[in-house]
Image (tube, rainbow, N blue to C red; front, side):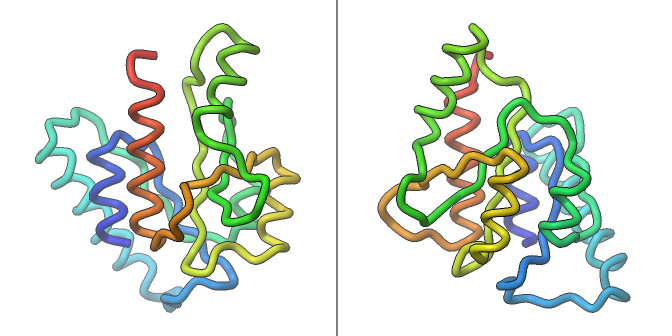
Length: 161
């Protein structure tokens, strides 16, 4: 998670919410959350300094997908990385938004699952909340790589918007 937070900061993420899904490999003791959050916030500061970022993304307490999706912030586009058939490309989802609104979205939510993906119930919950399944290509990526890939693609596709 340290690497994801560092690189997400460098790639311009506004908020980072660690999700505790059913398939999350690393289980953190709730008493350890505060120590981890402090470490992550230090990583954010150092990453922002390194890349010349003049603002810091918010890093919040880990939550379950159900908690997160139940208290969802407002986003113009909600995406969930998906290994399932029928997932769309970033380009097609963003083109549809551009066609409908005449501009690129100013806020995008990107959900990345753990190793092995979200459970079917978690994916269904995300879709019910309005998340559009997107493919990250033909190769199954590690969670860290999927996060960096997704942020890079979104940064590229939304550049100049």
